[in-house]
Structures are given as structure tokens and as C-alpha cells.
Amino acid sequence: MHTINFNFNCISHAMMPSEKTTEGLMRIAIVEARNGMRRGDGGPFGAVIAKIGSNGKATIVSKGHNSVFVAPDPTAHAEVVVIRKAAKKLGKEKLGKDYLVVATTEPCPMCAGAINWAGISNLAYGTGIRDAKKFGFWETDVAAKKILRKGKLKNLKIVSGVLRGKCLRLFSEYEKIGGKKY
Image (cartoon, rainbow, N blue to C red; front, side, top):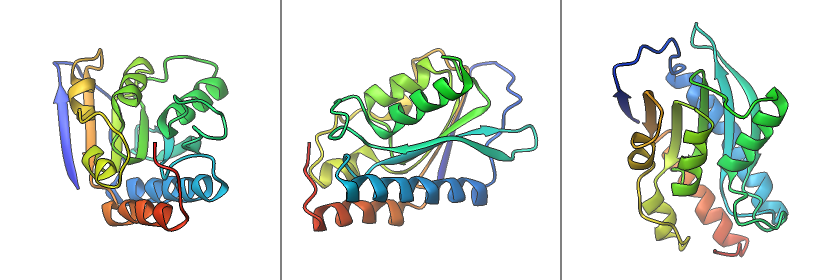
């Protein structure tokens, strides 16, 4: 795993949970991705949002998967789905710096923008956008960190490569079941 910290002279009380906790959250995102693709809801992408306590403990707020086919909505990417669920559950449009998005694949520019607008300062993902492109998914080849760095987030923490091998397998599983590329 690789960690990238962007600190723009802002003190944050939020901290990333332990590697073990982040991997546990990723396992849940992987299950979400499998559930969604097996039902035909969308592509092999899952995500979780957790609130990070001052002790680094993470509490799941929402979980979901890509739902572009079932919605039908081209913006129903896993990250957008979990942000919408969390915002509705919590009754606020800005989640804040104490939240973490865990996604099986690096957020696309739209999802990175949604993370920024939701004020979420912590991101962990498994595979990269280039991995998705190799499996035939049309992705804009712009790294999430480039988009998030230009946003309003002041203390951004990004961890990449979380359970990357397991996340990569989702693409193969999706191909095996004849999943539609988009």
C-alpha cells in the first residue's frame, strides 16, 4: 500500500484507521461489488464510507456498489451511491474530515469531485484507474489525487493498493460472468 498525505497548513483531528481496519473495510467493499455485479446492477465496483473516531476506530455509515444498470443512472458509481446513502442517513450534505471512503477502484474524476463536495478527506482504494482501463472500462485517465488536490479539502489522506490483488480479481470475475463494459 502507498500513502499520500496532502497537508495545506491545516490541523486535522481525523486519522486514518489502521491498515487492518482499512483492509477489513475493503473486504466489505469487495463483497458489495460482487453482490452488485452478480445481480447485474452494474460493474465490478464497491465502496464503503466509515466515520473515523479520534481513536482511529472506524464505524460503517454506508456501503454500496455500482448501480448504473439497475438505476438506470450513469452517475450511480459505487462512491456516489455510498455518499448519497451516508448524506441521507446523517441528514447532511457535507460529511466532513472525519469520514473515509474505501473503494475497490480509484475514483474516477466524477467520484473524486463528489468526494470533494462531500468534504471527505480520507480515501483508500484497491486498484487504479489504469487497471480499469486495461479491463475495458472507459475511464478518464486522471488520477483521483490530482482532482482532490485541486479541491477545497485541506488535509487529504489517500491510501492506494489496499488488497489490490483481490480487487483486481473482481474484473476477471466480471468478465467470466459476461458483465457489460461501459
